[in-house]
Length: 150
Image (cartoon, rainbow, N blue to C red):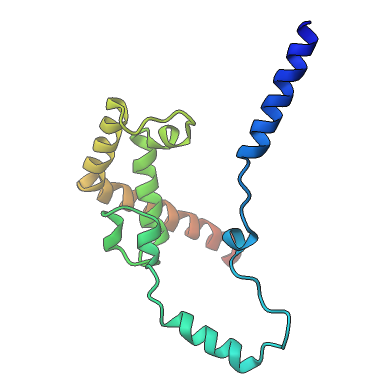
């Protein structure tokens, strides 16, 4: 008796699932299909490129970064400046906080780490770290130049 009820329930669920299944046309996923008749000319491609070039695109700063980093144009920081900033980020403990799968950006500990990083970044600590990194880079470059000179 239980087998009959199980089979009837299974059939009912299968029928309800099939009826509730929603099919999505391919156009909703990939857009309107390209017409197979006729060839696309070079002029058509060039015209399409010109149309798409006129559409305003977001700047890279709109994709990634923060309000603080929006003032720096892409590629304007030196390697030493980036390294000094990264060192301050690591000292504040934000590297491990960022890597954790369970990082909670609303946690008080995280807010304290961000505040410590920002204090260091906007004070003489950053300048001192930058000078330290530049000095290490300069001595490393000098170390490489000395053996070559001999």
